[in-house]
Amino acid sequence: MEPNDALVLARAQFGLNIAFHILFPSITIALGWLLVYFRLRYARTGDAAWLASYRLWTKIFALSFAMGVVSGIVMSFQFGTNWPGFMRAVGNIAGPLLAYEVLTAFFLEATFLGVMLFGMSRVPAWVHIGATLLVAGGTTLSAFWILALNSGCTRPPATSWSTVR
Ligand code: HEM
Image 1 (tube, protein in one colour):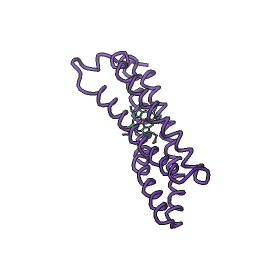
Image 2: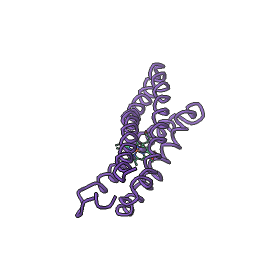
Image 3: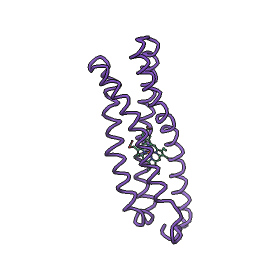
Image 4: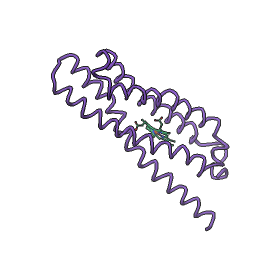
């Protein structure tokens, strides 16, 4: 195999992975806030239609979230396996930002998604509404950290990245 083949394959693998990954955050970032709206409308009106919408779309949110997590984790591994030279150069920025994303956003979402899914009859309404808000905020925070990471590490460098493969 030519060295260039490996580069093309690595790019193709990462490109396919990120194209798949972005489908799920695109759903969850907006849906999280829509679920806050549905939950608040149900709390205000007591109308069972808002509850039914909330329940249905929470399941779709959970599925998209799970797909986003599994495809995202593969990409952070690919940073190391496909682009070790690049990571040697930007690791001091990329590493902490990825860690902040997992420690703040992911932990928040994963914890309170459980309350959203299974807690409605177990916790007071205000806690359940709070959990829905925290999950929506966590998803948006996740996007914030990743966009900070991607913009910080991909801005035009002093020397070309192609020299640090
Ligand atoms: C190099 C690019 C990316 C990497 C390495 C990456 C990494 C990850 C990882 C490791 C996860 C699972 C852990 C967690 O939820 O924190 C994840 C999930 C997530 N990522 Fe990415 N990501 C990338 C691109 C993006 C982009 C461009 C966005 C949106 C602007 C985004 C938004 C999210 C969201 C919202 C989640 C939570 C799961 C979900 O809601 O589907 N990611 N990502």
